[in-house]
Amino acid sequence: MPMMAMRTINFENVRFDLNVIRLATKLVKFNAALFFVPSQICGFTVNLYILPRIIMKAFRYFFKILLIFCVLTETTAAHASHAGPVKPNAAEKNGKIITGADQTDLYIGYLKGKNIGMVINQTSVIGKNLTLSVDSLLKLGIAVKKVFGPEHGFRGNASNGAEVSNAIDAKTGLPVVSLYGNKHYKPTPSDLQGLDLIIFDIQDVGARFYTYLSTLHYVMEACAENNIELMILDRPNPNGFCVDGPVLDTVNRSFIGLNPIPIAHGLTIAEYAQMLNGEGWLKNHVQCKLKIIKVANYAHSDTYVLPVNPSPNLNTEQSILLYPSVCLFEGTALSLGRGTMFPFLQVGHPSLIGKYSYSFKPVSIAGMSEDPPQKDKVCYGIDLRDYNTNIIHKNGRINLTWLMQLYQAFPDKAHFFNAYFTKLAGSTELRKQIEAGKKEEEIRAGWEPALSNYKVIREKYLLYR
Image 1 (cartoon, rainbow, N blue to C red):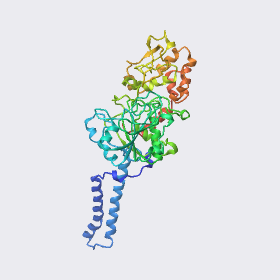
Image 2 (image 1 turned 90 degrees about the horizontal axis):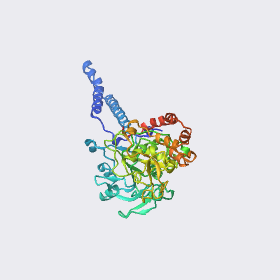
Image 3 (image 1 turned 90 degrees about the vertical axis):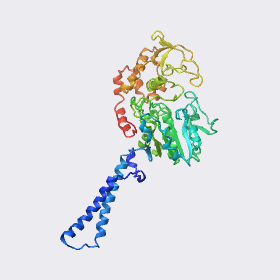
Image 4 (image 1 turned 45 degrees about the horizontal axis):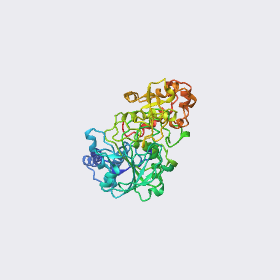
């Protein structure tokens, strides 16, 4: 059910336009005139018994107009869940993209007097010095009591898929609860005990299989079940211009894809949170109370360079922009550059020698990839470090050509794909289509009508254009 159908009027947020009040006042005068003017012309006496009735009727018209205005004002607001997004103020004037976290004036007052938990990682920074938000809030006197860390950990130094344990943060002394260790993806009631509000401030990259989306899903679910408000400090989606790929079949749900969205979803974290509520995707259709601090001066078509690497293996702007296309190779026998300093920017395999001249050699790199695919073997394949990403920005499509070409070049096609590919793709169809030698447009046609239907749903939750 769309969120608008469930909203109630919040009179505290209504601004009464003086023109509406003047209009209603004129109606009062008009009703009075309807009685007094004829009495003066015709010479009859004013009946004081019916005068109050006329005035009350006029005032009823007055308040009806005000009520209509309230409803119109409220329904034109962004349909964020519950409290809805807090609009940027002075930040809008300079035209520069400013994250929700950087607009502290919009939320510091709201946090005072509350016990706060934070779902953050190394991307949760504030200011030119890129100070971690938890450090900034503690200095400002905010009572941060606990930190929750996603995949790669609170400080972002764990390699992909590595289990992260609970700990005490050495700098702040705060307890850190891992939401990726030992399949503890969802905060428990005991994790949330004593907290009044949770802040979610993590940089996403716009791909369904990036696990921070699943962390958001489970955090919202836990907050809803424990009646705790969730504040989202929103950040731009560096791939927000792209909405493409097969929509996930929920039969294939996993932590790298929980809900029916395409590979490139085209949403910010806050927009996706609204979709989770609005589409009833949380367990038992619970609704999480949200308070959103929007990004200032941002549009989905904008180019946004992340100030901090979102994860150890997305260490360049180029790799972030190619991630929705290249990550599919995680579900194949090929190396996509893990174990090198250019992950997601090179793809290859030892058996492709003679077919490709470019080569690289994955090795163990602590904190990035200790045991990468094709470790210590020379791989031959493609180099994407100089690929023109403006092509993807212009056409808004993920690249399928590399996957199709490398499959055709691979000598042992029976072992090209592995079971993980279906989870990444979201369905079994893409693998079947590539194995059958389908052309790209035939493959894309198979994504319909689900992809077009998703685009319609997405429109309901956009905070930015």
